[in-house]
Length: 143
Image 1 (cartoon, rainbow, N blue to C red):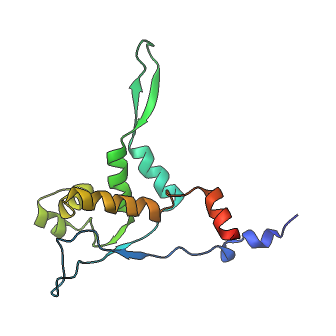
Image 2: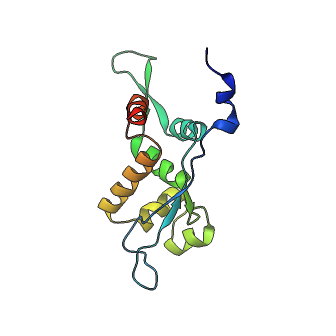
């Protein structure tokens, strides 16, 4: 049997924040795209986000039977907004400046070039570990 002490919280690797330039349309005084600060989501945060984007739909031909469905567009938007540390997408002054009322509307308005939004969503998903399986990560660590 292994050493249980290795599983204690003090031995857990910390996942830090990173920077990402989400759009080419927001730049500093030198024309360099502004970097956004991104944090990784926890499993609990991801579960809450997914649950808030899940709904039941009736099964055709089977009364009183339902199946769950995830609104993936909403899920990805919420995943992005919960991962962004800076700029603060919940800031009312920032939302007001774009004429929106939610962080999800704000990020879609700030990153309004579809390909950039898709790249940003892909980055967020990859940063949160949705690009490879745990088995792939174990294999990579062994090499």
